[in-house]
Amino acid sequence: MKLLNEILGTRYPIIQGGMANIATGEFAAACSNAGALGIIGAGGMNADTLRQNIRRCKALTNKPFGVNIMLMHPQADEFAKIVVEEGVPVVTTGAGNPGKYVPMWKAAGIKVIPVVAAAVLAKHLEPLGIDAVIAEGTESGGHVGEMTTMALVPQVVDAVSVPVIAAGGIADGRQMAAALALGACGVQVGTCLLVSEECPIHENYKAALLKAKDSDTIVTGRIGGSPVRVLKNRMSREYVRQEKAGADKMELEKFTLGSLRRAVFEGDTATGSLMAGQVAGMLHEVRPVADILADLYESGRQRIAALNAEC
Ligand SMILES: Cc1cc2nc3c(=O)[nH]c(=O)nc-3n(C[C@H](O)[C@H](O)[C@H](O)COP(=O)(O)O)c2cc1C
Image (tube, rainbow, N blue to C red; front, side, top):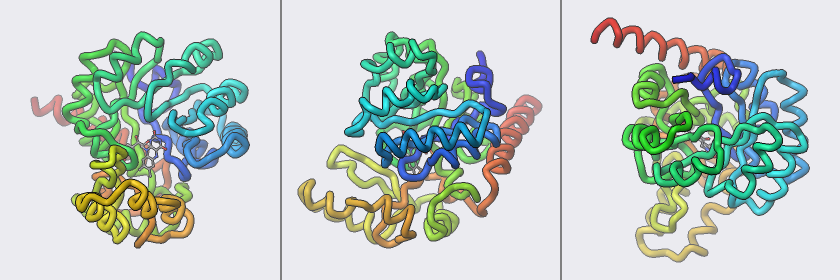
């Protein structure tokens, strides 16, 4: 099996997951320079800001990078053209089926890697000519599915013949080794990079992540059909309370309106949406991206070597 770094031309078999309002061109370039595939999160951007972020990223790194396009974004059609015009080497997609864009992207030489939360979608997308698939478990931060990484990854590996990248619940070498043991060719991480020096979120958001324990995340919107994993706080607890009490969708929308931006830019930890995965409890210090990535990779290798010696 080819490892992800061989497929993408990166130093490590690691992707920095696209993160709306957070993964700017600068941040993606920092991650690419540090050995991962940096990804610009187009969610929260418009056509102009996406173009600026791509150009900024290109100016700051000569390494491969990508753009994440959430397919329900109102400007998804425009974003799909911009990545071609700007010569972006890799596109990851979320929230749907990128089928109508794949021929245009493939013709432009773009590697297409959709994110899936179930094997059935991976199987459906494979004939479109995708290059790989990211199987993201419900442990992850942000929008989530139902299945755990442990159950999902091997079932996606069995369902498709393209390489599978594991995401959700990976923050150290033990989890990296486990992902490879499940049949993944590499990993995508988000939460562990939120506490990097380079990550442009407010310091209150980082402090909340460092304080979090293993069970300090909660999923809002499970009932309403748009589940998002965030840190527990006044907003998310109240959201889930009202959701369980049967509040209508419009009422609930009021809670989340602008809440990610409040968390990211204003550091509002009470009513902001502090998106984070279940590995938040494993984060203990703010470090440079290069240290986080090198540790993840090296400790993963050591774990695999230790298992080889033990078994
Ligand atoms: C704050 C935050 C925002 C995210 N935003 C997006 C997004 O805009 N698009 C997307 O496809 N995934 C998004 N994700 C998911 C990540 O790209 C990645 O797959 C996930 O974080 C991996 O799981 P982990 O959080 O356990 O590391 C987000 C994750 C976080 C933590």
